[in-house]
Amino acid sequence: MQMKEALELRKKWGDKPCDHPQLVKEYHLGTQTGDRVCTQCGLSASPEYFKKEK
Image (tube, rainbow, N blue to C red; front, side, top):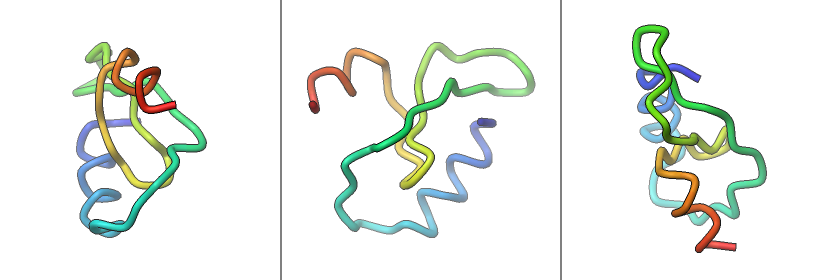
């Protein structure tokens, strides 16, 4: 998912809680950032962050 798309998704989602059911790689202008994005809420963070959340 592109970084811009994740930001738009985060704005739409708001501050609701999310269990981050599906994560995808984040890209900025076609290049991987190394982060993952939740396809439900748009949260972007390192893979390690999501492992700690589980």
